[in-house]
Amino acid sequence: MNDIVGHALAQKDYRQIHLARHLLPFEDHKFLKPEDARVIVRGKGVHVWDDSGKRFLDGLSGLWCTTLGYGRPELVAAAAAQMEALSYCSQYFNTAHPAVSELSAKLFELLPSRYGRILYTNSGSEANDILIKLVRRYWQLAGRPEKRVLIGRHNGYHGATVGSASLGGMKVMHELGDTVLAEVHHIAEPYWFGYQGPLTEQEFGLHAAGELEKKILALGPDTVGAFVAEPFQGAGGMIFPPSSYWPEIQRICDKYQVLLCADEVVGGFGRTGHWFAHEYFGFQPDVLTIAKGLTSGYVPMGGLVLSARIGDMLAEQGGLFAHGLTYQGHPVAAAVAVATLRLLDEGGVVDDVQRILGPHLQHRLRQAFAEHVLVGEIQGAGAVAALQLAPSRGSKQRFANEHAVGLYCMRRAQEHGLIVRTTNARVIIAPPLVSTLAEVDELIDKLGAALDDTARALKMR
Ligand SMILES: Cc1ncc(COP(=O)(O)O)c(C=O)c1O
Image (tube, rainbow, N blue to C red; front, side, top):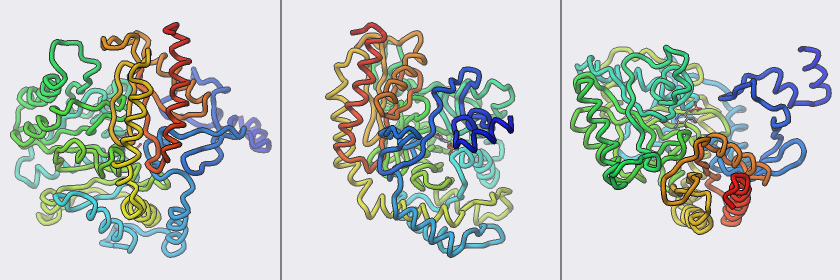
């Protein structure tokens, strides 16, 4: 094997090294086709290029993270300057550094005023992992240590570590057996297209939220410490719940004194045209987990944002919250995050998503695809959307081989030079927040070509 890799390296055959050496995220290696492997060598603006020179429009912002696009000189300069000034500094031993303090000052200027403290991490998974400990610690300090249970949702995604995958409801991630922690439970997702019963959409939203109340009552309100969910499901298929859902969830959490924890890893930092997706939906979480758009994906960073009430209790009541990461509040990540937030805020990017980019994208999607033979539903707001591929419009029917249909469409999009992702038969779109209107139109054209190809392959036209 080393010979193969050595030879490949000499030839700069990165595909070969990739296939020989890497264990890839969410792939069954047995079915990987060498010819499908891509080597991406360059990115600028909203485009990336592979090693053959082919250009792709990035319709997914990397993995929902490169909100400012690729190659932004301001972010490069911020990272370089910070590496020169202070390349590493921990937050251990009661230590601060300018970059992380500036970041927190800027972040809390943008967050709703109920939030008071942040614990930095390197990823969304870590933030959600630590959330489990945080919830238990909070209830210990509040004198109710029995409130240890956390409730998540089926088909929710909160990360890939044992704790975060436990909170998530991805069946495939629970198949190793002990990967759902004890005292973590799940309720059904608010997936309107997947619902076949007699309720209206708004009734269904209340019904789906009512699952939480039922679960709390079944487990005992005295044992339930938190409910954890994405404001809209990202990896689960960009599923937007009916508008009746979140107010009812809020009412239930308030009634039973259950902490409401919003995973803003995908929805945060302008994606919906609001700074945070919970603001778009109009509810008030106690805790937020953030990552991805915090640094526009240039360097890893995440965090756990606590309401002032929770943060102050942890800080003021004393006792050790036994937690710490070597790279927590890393100076380079913090400097890039400060530069990112400034561009999003003072550069007017989030404002533009709300006023210009979002309305244009949402309008163009509906104009181009609402009547498409393969499209059963379009959901989304701001710079995020999903198209549900379906065998017949208007019936909420679903393909038996949803996964294969979605994958085919995703591959066709790639052929046409567009990167999007699918979850089952939902096509997920989340372009960089700095996309121009012409780039949105390019996305619509390429996506249309992929949908037409898929419809033809399915003999629907
Ligand atoms: C909603 C949500 N939470 C958490 C995560 C995990 O973040 P990370 O991959 O940075 O660990 C993801 C990743 O896609 C996500 O979509």
